Image (cartoon, rainbow, N blue to C red; front, side, top):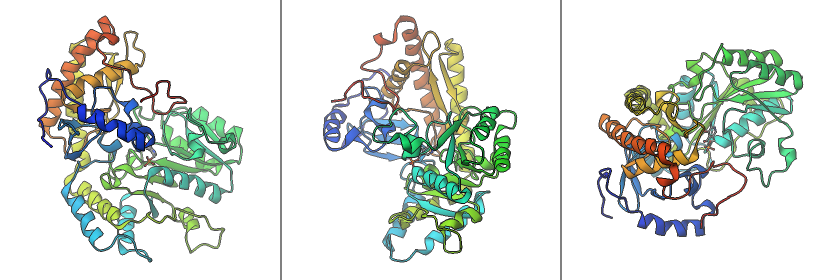
Length: 452
Ligand SMILES: Cc1ncc(COP(=O)(O)O)c(C=O)c1O
């Protein structure tokens, strides 16, 4: 495969290889891939359809086009692609055997590392993905409290692929309505909605599940008040740290906000893209899944592949790298450099209110708005199309330890050029600039356009 360097803005990218391979992927795999967020409907038509390899924050597509990548494997790859200390640790573990008939010692090794690090963790249990541990948290909470209802924050978009959560979304086909009869919601930064929830279901709420923060910071001590209301009403306080864990702070958002959740779920950045997730929490609750309880046993995260040695070794090496290299500081610093650069461009082009970065520097996303400043998928698609054309693959601006000053500065230059086009599209109509259909929300009821 010949590799072409990141292009000058005016050069057209070729996606012939991508387009050819796309057909085959859709013939073989529903949606052509294994995560909706990576799907064709999430990207412009003029985009790489596949990644062939990555190194650091650079990736190459089947046509040999090189991109600086953001988003990093749905926020899993915090250190960078093919990060050698992590890969070497995984390979060493693999060579010792990957799965035995008794537990491997590496399970306790990673557990100890996490118990020492994460404030709420007295015990941890591993799985391969975040959805599974969040579902386990809901089950444990129901078993521990003997209560039926699970409440989650309606302003947070995703907790699990499982029925208790997906049944509440637009994409609920195949899930009987009964599956969601025991879920309820509350709103972020709206403590009255949490009080109302407990009033509506007195003595019936097993737990509240939420992220500590997304793009809006907590106001008026909201998080501590939620924790307090949970304690007062006998419900468990469960934090989803899938995004915040190891990215916002090494010890998670619970540490930043001084929280003491009963249970917390980690995944994504835990192993730099290797598949490991963890449910962490109080011994008294977690032990319901163990052998040291006289209470009724909970079937807690018992899976064939849950403790795959190479993935656990990758997690240990990742967490050690986060500690030794000051990774989280770098994520903030480079994100801030990007935010400063893009902020200046937005102001100088008069695009305030039309294009904005949101979230903390370690986890930047962007908002695209049309002429009336309404959220616009068409403008999102145009922006992505124009940065892709300039060698930046960015459904968000979530960075990694591998994003160098040069990568960030090249991104700022590309964004500057893309926003000039964006501005012209605001003036003359986005359809004049967009090549192909706009992107769609990943979770929706119908494929209003069939991709074939
Ligand atoms: C906040 C949050 N929780 C849970 C999950 C589910 O994790 P997984 O995709 O590993 O099942 C995600 C996935 O995007 C997430 O963003």
